[in-house]
Amino acid sequence: EVQLVESGGALVQPGGSLRLSCAASGFTFSNYAMTWVRQAPGKGLEWVSYISASGSNIDYADSVKGRLTISRDNAKNSLSLQMNSLRDEDTAVYYCARVKGNYFDSNFDFWGQGTLVTVSS
Amino acid sequence: EIVMTQSPATLSVSPGERATLSCRASQSISSNLAWYQQKPGQAPRLLIYGASTRATGIPARFSGSGSGTEFTLTISSLLSEDFAVYYCQQYNKWPPFTFGQGTKLEI
Image (cartoon, rainbow over all chains, first blue to last red; front, side, top):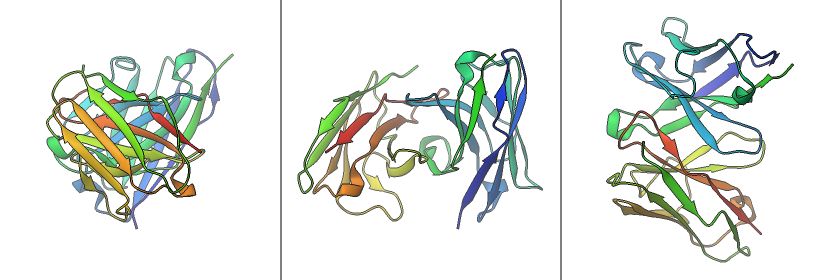
């Protein structure tokens, strides 16, 4: 059974930092690209970042570029999101999700339960 | 960036009835479209990919259609568990991946 479990969400002040983690199990982690998607309270889904299976290809939404850094450790079946210079508008539930396939099959077939990041003074 | 627009924002339907949700892309995305279901307090779940292929374990009452810029998600006979928010997502030209704003299906 595919499982994705996020952790690390917390209350943080504007300008602060936080590191989110996503522990993967039930599949060969190193074979799949992964992604982060966030959802602000009462709002829709917003894609945040993507990392290829090997970690060699990385993309970010313009809204987070230069502040958030995605990484993965295939030996530990783990995905991370380092969040720096946090802003109020980064407040959201952050989901990690598995990317199903290659470029034209890159929908998100499994999702974690999410972790809440609140940016507030 | 490809903009995805869903309609209506809210759809009120009775159990047992048919629901039709729409999603429009600002440019052609071929059939590279997915639909997700999200219930309150839960993560999204993949329903449909490739515009019309049901994901593993998704009941046959869910069907998707369309290509290019116009897409439809149809739920043939609504059960109480189907009342949720539905999102479409394009993955034809990325980054960025883009989602529609969602359609809330309510009783």
